[in-house]
Amino acid sequence: MSEVSETIDTDIVIVGGGVAGSALAAALRNSGHRLVVIDQRTGPIDTSRGDHFSPVNVEAFADWGILDGFFAKGATKRIGHEFRTSSGEVLVSAEYTELGIKYPYFLVYHHDLMAETFQEFAAESKNYQLFQPYAAKSFDIEDGSIKSVTAVSPEGKSITVRAHLVIASDGAASPIRAALRFPTFEHPYRRTMVAFFATRPADLSPEDYFFRYSDPSGVLVIQQRNDGQVKITMPIGDEGVPWWKVSSQEQRAEVLGERAHILRGLETEMGGFYPVRMIHALQYVSGNTVLVGDAAHAIHPARGQGLNMGIGALPELLKHIPSPSEISNPAKVAAGLLAYEQVQKPKYERVMARNHAAAMDMELSADDNHEFFLKRQDDAIRKMALIPEARRLHLLEGTGYHFGVPGVDEVEF
Ligand SMILES: Cc1cc2nc3c(=O)[nH]c(=O)nc-3n(C[C@H](O)[C@H](O)[C@H](O)COP(=O)(O)OP(=O)(O)OC[C@H]3O[C@@H](n4cnc5c(N)ncnc54)[C@H](O)[C@@H]3O)c2cc1C
Image (cartoon, rainbow, N blue to C red; front, top):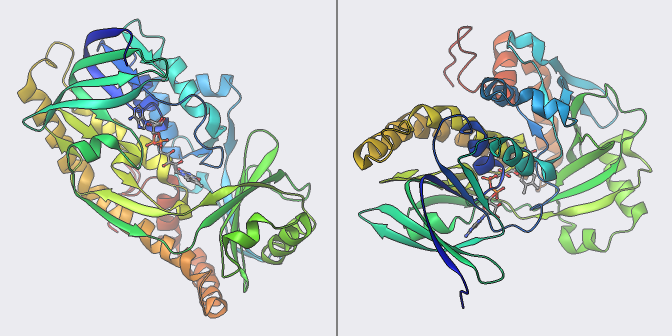
């Protein structure tokens, strides 16, 4: 039973203060809009999620005036990547300076701190209010628009927020997407992902690179964190989740060491198991409400793009949010959001399709016949590295410049 009830009128309400919603709040901090963020979390969501903001998003952070703030808080850089065989033969090695982009690096920042850091930036605005932990429980919907959101704290305090624009950044299970009955396209992947943490192996270099290792037994990726650890992720093969759950240090070291010899004997801590599902909303917008982040497009982590797609859509969305003096006009809000959807949706259809292809490659790498498949994949990567156009596409997609670098090239996939 609610003990206290409060009604708040605002310009924009963001439901879901994960990475995508909080990044938008930070980007809006100087816009002059009144902003309310509602989030139900009591702590970090899941420490195994992505730690690397892609170069295209680093460029956005610079535009929003928050890039220096991240460095001040300890963010580091990742400047390149290498795909290697288990024994260390290099299939492709690249640094992002090759692309001629302004910020040729990923920003490495601990996932657990991301949302909170964006919220700190957002709090520089006197028009910003955060309600956390508050769970949005009901939505007053009229003609496809959400007129108000009612959220409740664990103590039973209730707030009703009436807003001109509603941002649904409430994650892959999105209660708002369900309330608005948005249809989705979904694909459940067969292979669960597993994540491990470990102290960085001393001989894993360069220090500021991402690594993918492949062996006839399977693939894995190693990503640096900025706490001296690395995160190792891979799809689980036929041994299955129960085997990994009870696995000993020695058993884990044996499997990881086979896929990447550099990990032989490594002590690991289990990060978690992730059944993966692609979910793409068939529409992002209804009236005054727009889906953002995983609520709109949850993807397989094969390319480490999930959080980066969520942030990557924000510069386009920001262009279409009416100014504070116009946001109370429902027609302007609806038209702005539709214009956003018309630009962003077709782009993300293609990014999702490419990601799905990479996800299927990862599935096959853990499937029957994976030895043959992995050999073919290694050969394709070796060739790609030597063909300038293919290599550039590989780097553009990896860094979030899916459609080319503005002013440098325009790429059709
Ligand atoms: C194992 C794994 C590894 C990954 N690795 C990478 C990677 O390397 N690179 C990458 O870019 N991405 C990666 N991702 C994906 C990435 O983590 C997600 O895409 C990203 O975190 C999604 O952000 P979001 O803000 O859209 O959603 P979320 O982070 O899920 O945030 C949603 C927020 O909404 C809140 N919420 C939900 N319902 C309500 C409600 N009713 N009321 C109030 N609040 C609510 C939740 O509390 C949460 O804070 C990975 C994901 C997984 C699972």
